[in-house]
Each structure stands twice: as structure tokens, then as C-alpha cells.
Length: 111
Image (tube, rainbow, N blue to C red; front, side, top):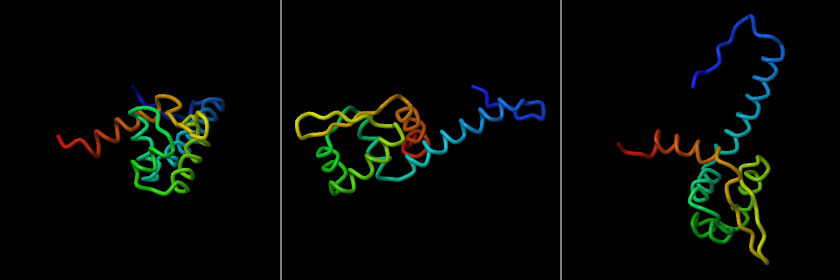
């Protein structure tokens, strides 16, 4: 994959598109830049989890977990599913998984 080359010959539409994409990427990166949200995504990579399961896995209070899930939901990174009184979350698409693989390779994999 090649990164785009900026040039003075780029038309306005190309530049506008790049700015729009940069905004989306920036919002995505801000959403995962908190260690609590990052850990939630790490747990969701293995499959759907209830809020209670995430509380236990993170050793965190329900209010803190819900706040982080709210931000991830706002950014479209997780999807909720209600079953009775329980709410389950899963990754909304493959973007978080792909980024987490890179983060894991760069920071966690002790090769």
C-alpha cells in the first residue's frame, strides 16, 4: 500500500477528500487513545462481551466502563445488543481489530 503523494497539481476535490479522511482518522485515533477504551477493544477482539463481563475483565466500575463504551459507540467502533437487562457489545467492523494487530506488533509482541 502506497501513501498518497501531495502535489501542487492536486485538485480541490482531492484535497477536500483528504481533509475529510484525515478528520475521520483523527477521530478514530482519539477514540482508541485512552487506555480504558483500548483495553475494551482488546477484549472485544475475542468476541462479544456483556458490560458486566467487561467490568470484571477490566476490574473497573460500571460507570467507568459505560462511559468508555459510550465513546466507542459514538465513534462507531462497537455495536450494542440488548438481551433482557444485559447489554452486550461487539466490534462494529474490522478497523479496530486491524489497528490492534499493528499496536500489538509494535508494543506487545516481544520478538
